[in-house]
Length: 298
Image (cartoon, rainbow, N blue to C red; front, side, top):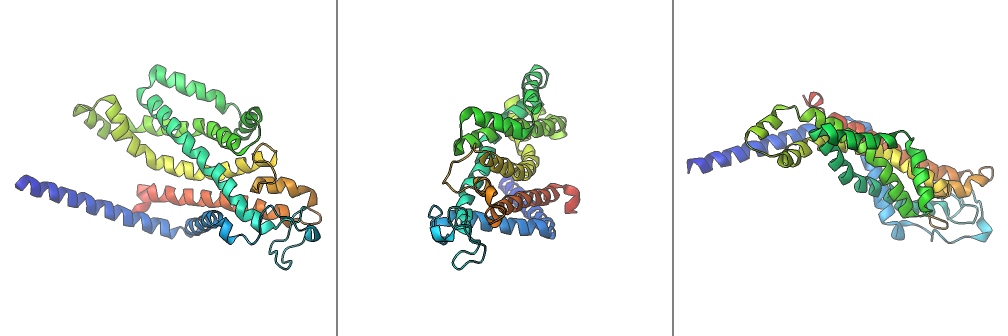
């Protein structure tokens, strides 16, 4: 009976401690106004992109021959039209689907691979470290954008080409973060305690190291998403992403760059979306870093 009471008291204590940490984290994040604005903005962009069939005023593929290169605030076309008379606002709303999809999915594909490689190399060291990290150093020799272009060029244009190319390029960057954090954590007392209680290497990696690696990983991935959407837009700009007439922010910039003199908004507005979404990820990443910093939660 007493043991049950002690167990219940311990569970209550841990639950209260989690609530306190949660409220402290919210207070720290709430102090970062830029991060809050970025969260709201990004949520709206995602929501509007999902609801594109309902919200978009026109079919993004429909052109109005009599309204080619119409300026912003033209009646019925808030952001004007492009070189083929298609509504720019509608194409931006629909283009968010491809652009955000090619931003989030590569990170989700790269995460499990990078986690496994980083944890194995960081924990076991020796020849495992040498084989994994020296192999990834070869990929580090090439800039992210150039390596993504090379992979996409080999695979041929298409949305999945962008996703695969960026996913492959992300693996060494995420692995390096996991590797560095794992090397630091494996010397901590909680790992030694787990080993003393009889935990094997797999149990230590999965139940001790993995949960403690995740906070740093979340911050890094959130920040690097800002770079991913720029790289994805760049691949579409160079004709390696989705093909016309599919709406995509990078493709819109490329399609209308020849009309900058007559209708600059057709290129500027989708480019502005790429910049704002990229900055939003960076601001959110900075806010999460402050939340996960114990010194900022005092």
